[in-house]
Amino acid sequence: MQRFRGLTLMRLWLLAVFVVGVTSSLWSQALSLNQAVEAALASGADHTILEANLASAQAVLSLAQARVGLTVTAAASYNASEAFNNPARELVTVATKTTPTVDPLVMSVGSISKDGVIPQNAQASVTLATPQTSLTLRSTEGFQIAPDGSFNHATTGTASVSQVLYSGYPGGSLQAALDKALLAAEVAALNAQSNRNKLVLSVKQAFYTLLSAQETMAQLEVALSQRREALRFTSAKANLGQATGLDLKTAQINLRSAELDQIAGQSSLEVARKRLANLMGRPVAQGFTAALEPDPAVQAASLEEAIQLALQNRVEPKVAKANAASAAVDAAVALTAMNPSVNLTGSVNGSYDWQSKVSSAVVVLGVSLGLPVTDAGAAVSLGLQAGAARSVAQTQEMQLQRSVPVDVSEAWNAWKVSQQRHDLAVLSQELAEGQKQVVQAQFDNGLKNLSDLQTAEVALSTAGLNLVKAKIAAQLAALQLQSLLGL
Image (cartoon, rainbow, N blue to C red):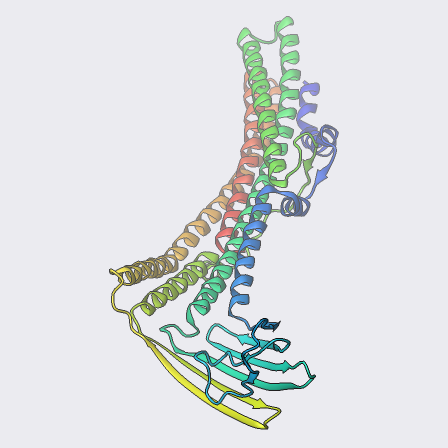
């Protein structure tokens, strides 16, 4: 009897020894929660995908920003020509031009020459442009070299500007593309944050599940050891005629049940370890165990505070708002196809003949007006499509504003109930421990039979397992609530 009682008195000691010692011998490394999260963020496949999506959105944004920025281009050219076998024609040099050519940007010195006269032309230009404005500066040097060494020299210069006054969208289509790229980058960043939070939540859930599986295995190993000792004790009693066949059968069934529970617990433990390893991007063969961690805390003192935090921090409403803004840009761009466009152009052209000292200048101004006539309804269809997308995004935003408080309230109540169930499981475990001690004392004094003692021992083991289940349920409920708060 004293031997059987000793197992009960050493129950907590055996449990502690198993958690600290036995599991450490089965796996090589005790992993903290922070280490698990850092490993998942550094090496996990899910995080790699998140980073790639975010980098892609940033690249699109950079391209859109480059397209609306200032571009500078420069060009230079030189040419020379000479006519042969033309003795009947005298050299006639056109040194200046009093009227511009058809293209005001091209003014050069031309010539008709006879043998040995070389007309030459050198030209350089610089263009500065934005999507709405462009400025071009061009200079041309033209001169002729005669056989006697004399030459004619003329310089022309052009400054031309083009400005879009109205195109239906402020800044034009490229600015619209930039606005959409900015919103897309914002959405990508928000989604990356959301997915990162989900990944961290998954790691924490897997970590605490593994920790719970380890605690369950500790309980099961202790229970299995007790069932084996109980069967040996009952068999000895039966040989002495102090235990019935029913007592022996009960001890055998209890042992078999503990063996099956141990097998199932070991399987659950391995599955939990593999899931955490996959999230961390580590080979399953690399052994580790979850180190003891405090229960996750909820960063809200009341339901009202929790709802306020969720509305401030949740990513989904922000994404819906950005999507609505992006759809508004699409709608505005679609309307530009149905609106007129107005462009202003202007140029100043000047020339100077260095030999005759004659100069000239021409100023050209122009306005162009584009009026859409028909596009077979394409612009209207685009506008309807963009308007529908905007309406959907706005509706989603409103739905989230309404659903977030409901989801938080549900998670808050579930967390509170799980805490109460955990407290109840603690009391139940304490009650089972007390009942076991009472039955043990009564059994020692001949007031209870062996079957009563076995039943009390099974009830105590069951209460311990239920406490572990209640604990992990409360932990997972707290993690779920934290996730809904956007933290």
